[in-house]
Length: 381
Image (spheres, rainbow, N blue to C red):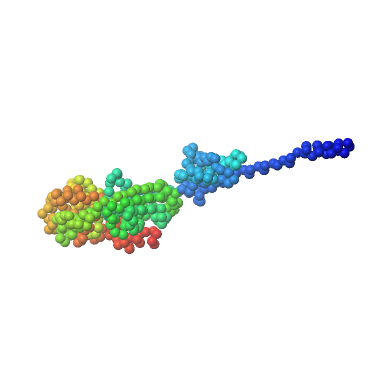
């Protein structure tokens, strides 16, 4: 009986023993880092990254204006990036929250300040952005003109992007310290679409002068219209898409006021223009002064050369050159020309005796050979 009692006692002790317990280790807190681009550029994005968790909230705020900056969160929840440019000389507060697998939140705060330029340069587009449906001729020059001098032309040129469809080789040429023109190796192909993106915001254009804004524009090139005016024959052929469709008698500039030779491009057209020699320095009372209203006017240079009607020289048209530098036509021919030729169309002049149209004289750009034109690029020097 004693042996039985001991056995029973031992059995009861083993049955009541407790199972061992385990403790789950805590999940490490998520980490968050906030970074921004080099040199505090307003175009460099602010980036938030999470490790050991996911981003649950980011707020980037302009501390002076109080407005929020937009941003995008990656699909995996690990990266958030600003999606719009920042301002110059602005301070931004950044608050980022990340959460780990246990739902524990970590918050990180930061302040970011962008650079303050010495000055800002605004890029005007050449020609001005067209209205709906407007098109241009095969000789149209495009470009950008800044309102401040550009001393780092290479930096500016790298920020200017031109796309053509169909593709055509083209290059920039700096006309002066503020203005760069762009053209193809030869006239544009009819039907070409040209898109110019001036991505200059945030770009140091030299001397701590930064681009003020990005600009973009698209131009459409219409059919080929080219006129060929000859000072020897006093005739002007009209070519539409390479085929001669008209020929008309003309009178070019006389010996004392000759018309420039070379390709000209129509830059403006008006039904009537008051032409006054005082605009280029020949004043009332001086020899050669004139002031008259002319009709069906298409400007082919900025120093007073037009294609227009002149009823007073109809008898000389086809026989002698008697104008002040313009291409005179009869009223009927001038109206026909006006109805068919538009901005960007080409007027090529030969044997006029006035020397080549200057490069700067809107638009003398086609006077240069392609090899010489390419030398005007800051990236080809």
